[in-house]
Image (cartoon, rainbow, N blue to C red):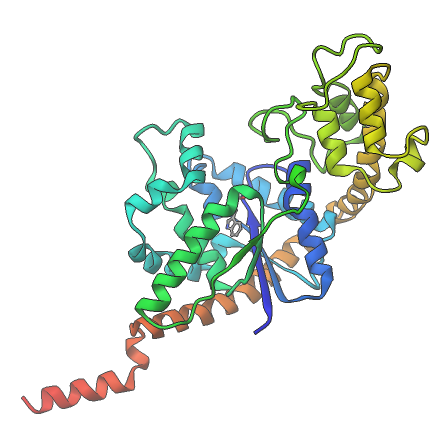
Length: 362
Ligand code: TRP
């Protein structure tokens, strides 16, 4: 059987550079590798509602933002099926059956959910929908028989939980579900890009993100005010690389020809870092270099976004077609799942015949 990709994002905001290096870039590479039989990318609006139930407008407004981000980075609707989660009721049905295979204690141990519960300040008032979203995510992945999930590192516990559900389902009923694997970036810096403030993770809620849809002026302002080394005050001061967000971004974004193009005085990143550590290299010079590198990546993304923004109905048409195609796949899996559980009663000729005989012979 061929390899299949399923991955997705919650539509709670525009996508940023953390999403880009952590997952989007890889999705496009995998899409273009020709290695995959089918590729599905999901806009996980139902999952977004599990902690935004009081703000469905936010979710609704961000579906188009995420779709535009996908299309602008090079997700190609000819090669990749883009779908909207809530429009596929089969996913909810699968979630309900999988919920029987998962204990409350197991959900409580999921480290990503634990962190998120803390961050959202739910205390003991954890919404059931939020608490159980890993089960729904298992439905997302298995409905499409995904073998591969390109996602950020924080999604690892979800994939592990999915694998457990698959094993339990297959051993309890019949082997119809596929155990997925996560695919995370090889460059470890890309796995968790810090925010512009140097904080652990780039995120909308921390206000430290550079968005794929930011204008050149916004990118410039954000990079110029980025966290570096607070003790690197004068150009001549020796500087620190560790925890210096500008250098972390360079680690994530620099390309072999970046120096030749934008900073020919240095051969490579090691040379630049050495100079910074020795002293005599100012932050502004390094930041300008970073802006050039980021812009090289962002210019074509913005151009594509502009194109699609001019035709929003076309984007919705892409989403509708993708969702319809995806629903067929999910419906076929649901049918197999119910067959395995032997709850497709009306199709079960054997069942009806056997019970007819049983009651006739009373
Ligand atoms: N949990 C993912 C996020 O927070 C979104 C998501 C929903 C997803 N369903 C998925 C990711 C299935 C990978 C596979 O961004």
